[in-house]
Length: 143
Image (cartoon, rainbow, N blue to C red):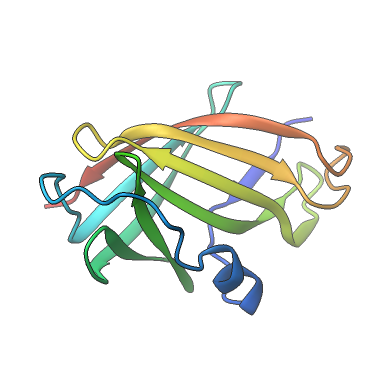
């Protein structure tokens, strides 16, 4: 079943709990992110989805990413940016399900390329809870 995912960050306390400061080594030499970016996610079936991000520093090894109506913190952990969020999904039949998936995103601070592991938290769009897949992501700074 083909699905379109709403790339919207949840604005609930659940997301805040997922994004609580993760201990990890931040590197003073690692590039930081600041400004406007476009994140392009490519699903295993080849579909692409774009999301606009506004990124601001929130300390050493920390950036706050606002996308859509919500936002969350990404942390520099072991040389990779890491962001955990929840996502809404839109199924091929048009059903819209809030907070149906969690997303664990990691990307390289130099190339801004990485992955987003999507895991269903509840049964949705014909998939059972626990179903997961990995999107490839590429982030580019907007002009």
